[in-house]
Length: 315
Length: 315
Image (cartoon, chains in turn blue, cyan):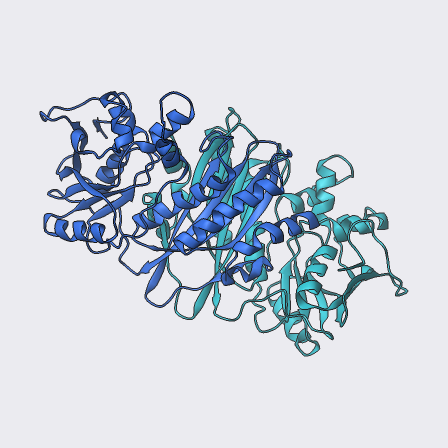
C-alpha cells in the first residue's frame, strides 16, 4: 500500500489541480459557476483493443483524454478536469520510466486543453493494461449540443478529414503504406475540436468515433430523420487520397476520427463557416437531412453505394 | 458495435437517470444547485485482486458503488449519481444472465442510496474483469469533512465494527470459520455510512479502507498530529470476537472496513453520539489525538503493541 501512495505522489500529484485536494483526501471537490452545468464523458481503453502494445506510452493517456475531450467538444462544453483509473499489468515493462513517459504525455495535453487531474485509482491486473478516464466540461445551462436536434432541410457537415485513423491502424498493422507516419499519428493522437463554440449555431452535433456512417445513423435515429451522405464530398487527407478510391468504405466506416458531425440550418451555414475559419478548423458539407428513416451513401450520379459494413440501413 | 449498443440498452438504460440523457448522447449533463459543490470519488476493482472470481455477480457492482459511496460519506456529501466502466473478459461466463444479476444488484443499491447511472463504457479484454466507477455526491460549499482537521485534544472514533471484512476474506479463502456467513458478507458488501450528517460536528473524517492503523496514519500525517489507539476499545463484532484475540492485528490492519474514522473535539462528543444514535449507527471512542508524529496502538496497560504490518510508525 505505501508503495501505491509513493507511486501516486511521484507520478500523478504533479498533474493534480486544486480541486483534487492534492490527491490527499477521500474525494475531489468541484463547483460549477452559477448558470453553468457540467458535461461528463467516460471512456475505457484496453491494450490490444483500443491501442497497440507497442504504441509509445506518451500517447496512451493523451489518446484517452482526447477521445473524451472530443465528446466534451461535441456537446459544446469547455474542457475543465478529469479523473484517471490505471490498471497496470504485473510485469516489469510498466516501470517508473514507462510512467514518466505516460505522465509527460498527459502533462503536455493538460496544458494544451486547460484541464487538470482531479483524482484516480491505480490497481494491478494479471491481464492487459486498462485505462479509464472521466472528463468534465462546463457549459451554460440549456445550451448543450445534442444528437437529437437535426431537422429535414439541414445540411450535414464534418470537421477535418475522415478515415485517417482507420487507415493509420492498418498502417501500424503493416497492411498499408504510410511513409510520412501521418495516418499512424492520426490513429494514435486524435485532435478533438474543443476550440469551436457552436452552441446556438448548429441543430445537432456528435463526435465521429464509431465511423462516419454509423454515427450518421445515430443522429438519424435520435433526430428521427433520414440522412444522405455524398461519398465524393467526404473530405480526405492527401495521405488517404494517395491510397486510392478503393479505401472509401474503410474511410467512411472505420471510426476513431474524433471529428465533429454537424447538422446545420441553411440560414446558419455562413455563421458555421465563419466560426470554423476563425478557429482554423476545416469544415466541409458532406450531405443533407431529410424526412424519413434511412442513412444512404450516394455516388456522383446519385446512386446508392452499398457497403458491407454500415451504409444504407433502415432501422 | 451494434451489439454493444443493444447490450447497453438492454442492461444499463434501465439504471440511467435523467442526467444521463438516456445514455443516447456524447455526454451526461449534471448541474449543481447554488451554494453546493460536488464531491467526486473513483475506484477500480479487478477480479482476483479486489473480489473473488466466484463472488456472486449481484454483489460486484454494489461493492464498487459502496466503496465509492463510503468516500462520499467520509466527505460529508449526499450521494447523487455515478458513471460505470465495465471491461469484460471474452468468455461465455459473462453472458446476459450474469449481467442480469450484476444489474439487479446495482438497481437495488441505486434505490437504497438514491443514486442513478450517468453514463459509462463497456469494453472487452483478454484479461480479468475490471470495473471502475466514478461517484458524485453533493454538499454545501466549504463544509466538506477533510482528513487534515484533527487537532491535539480531539478524541478518535469509529463507526460500526472493525476487521470483519478482512476476516471475511480469510473465511472465503477457507482459512477461518464463518458459520453464519456474516464475515463473508461484510467483505462482499460494505455498508457505507451515508446517513450521517457530521459536517460542522467533527474536525476530521475519512473512511477506513486500507486498515484502521494505516488510515490513522493518513489522518495523523495530513493533520500533523500523533494518534494513540486503544486496542481493547476498537469495536469487534461478536463473530470476530468469537475467533479469539489472536486476530487483533488482522482486524486492525486488514482493511476493507468502509467504516468512518473521526476526530472530534470534546465539546462536540455529545452531538456526535446523538447524531449517530438517530441514524442507528454504532459509534465508539477508540483513542485520542496528541501533538507529535506517531501512531501507536496501546494495550490495557498503556504499553505499545508492535504489529508486523502497520502499527507504531514514525514518518
